[in-house]
Length: 249
Image (cartoon, rainbow, N blue to C red; front, side):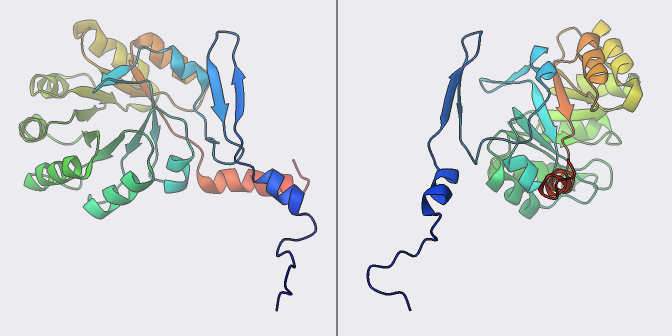
């Protein structure tokens, strides 16, 4: 039982309170940009600065240059990416979209199928995602142009069509009304981006840049407007933290 007047904090109360201070850190860069950072809640999963050099895609007044490709709610909550690209290898479920929207502080673009999930269900998932508050929906590469057209005719948020090659089907998806083309072609991505850009100079292109600066730069140079970046997982980040706690790093 705590005696009257006793302090429930440990003798190191002042230190504990100092470590949990809500006082932000304020600074200004050489270019004149002001920065306000919290001690505990500022994003720890930061996108490579290089991505800021691309032109960006403006969606409803917000210019998006970096898309964090993740469904990890901890990472999503702690990244400074301009947007979230949430695609997963299972049938889409509105409850998953709702969970991601709950933690995301940025526009969320969510996968609605096109591979495992096909047909009318893709359209219905896109409709529900829009009602839940998603900023855009992404359709996987195997989906035919007809699916892109059906979703475009149903929702009022951007439809992102994923492609892996620049061929007649990609061209048909563009003609079907895809608002953004997402190029996910592995090491061939810069080449595919350059090919699409050569005959569609106006098309908004999102593309995977990989984790290396060289890959990101090559994709930007090829003509990508925005880059999808795969952040480290929460497990990877925690492993690094534990190594530091053990004095191994």
